[in-house]
Image (cartoon, rainbow, N blue to C red):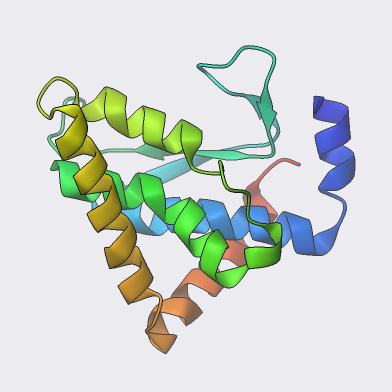
Length: 155
């Protein structure tokens, strides 16, 4: 999709909210991992896939350059967007939705983890996010954050 096509698609409220919900998953777990702020981006080109665009992105801001975040926390923050959208908006979820997030996780933890450890950490993080989503209070926090993010992303 082109940026113009994405912007047109984002005029649809339920799609825009689903994208914001995906990003809210990243933000919530990023904050739990130590992020102190966020920068919001509208349609943007995927860093590792020239010519391929996504609807939105959130860049997490950490307090100190070089901060150490444990791999389970990184896995939760990066897998959360897709897990949240799969469970709360299954009709708008795509099978490969977390591909770029998984690739980013691999970049963060390689070479400290081998491919099997990376896969296992990712799957465990997905299970943890799924467990958290069973909590009504957690879901309420997530929906509120998604509505806030929806207003901040420059569509």
